[in-house]
Amino acid sequence: MTKNNDNENNLELAKNYILDGKYKEAKDILNEMEDSGTGDRNYYLGIIHANDNDYKKAENYFLETLSLNKEYIGAYISLAELYNILDRKEDSKFLLEKAHQQDPNNTRIISYLVGIYTNLNDIDNSIKYTRKLLEISEEKDVSHFLITLLEKKSIDLIMIDSDEQKIEEANAYAKEMVSMDEDHPAGYKIMGLIAEKRKDYKLASDYLIKSFQRSQKDSTVLNSLTSCLLKLGDVYNAKISNEKSLEIDPENKTSLQLKKDIENLKNLK
Image 1: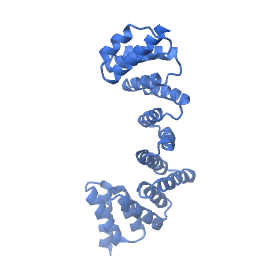
Image 2 (image 1 turned 180 degrees about the vertical axis):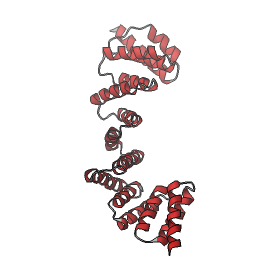
Image 3 (image 1 turned 120 degrees about the vertical axis):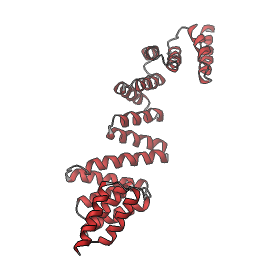
Image 4 (image 1 turned 90 degrees about the vertical axis):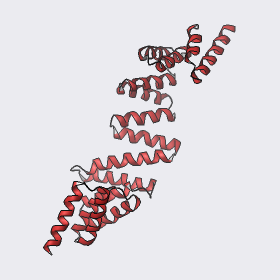
């Protein structure tokens, strides 16, 4: 009983040393101990060696921790972080998924999953876990990141020769973006691009104007708006839209081409 108490006290002391950045002191204590079967000693030694950039030893200690305790969430996370540093992203993902299965509402794990899937360019799983994170945290930064992901997914769906089903999927994402934050430009941008693709140029213009009103920095919105206005025969407002896009990005090739198109139309009149 006394030995168990000593172990617990030493582990607590080592943990506090680690939190204070006193890794040598923590290591000295841990090296005098045997792991009691909980995995704590090996886990803390893994943390220390990871801090020393001795990744092989750190990996071994984290693996030993998990061999003693398969439910040791901290070891899953720390080993996943280590694999991410070593660019072993698939291994990192595997560990994070296992940790998530055991602790599905752990926001740290979910945040790491969002990061790893974003780095792997797996947009669908990035969206999945960002939604989950938003359910738990309801933070505005998370909401805006989800909107960014939905915008990227929507553009991917509509910028290729998509069928109507994919366009409708993108439209649903756009409506979701607007419902999440009606002051954010992304949802209106996507709805405008969809309407343009469907050749409803008046509706497209309305949505694109709403998008630009919310963020006057996106020349691609203005280029689409300019094109729609030209299709509607509104050369005057198309010229204004084009001039604004060139103010934002004077070297934009699409904007410069649209400027030539407008000049040619004016010369014809």
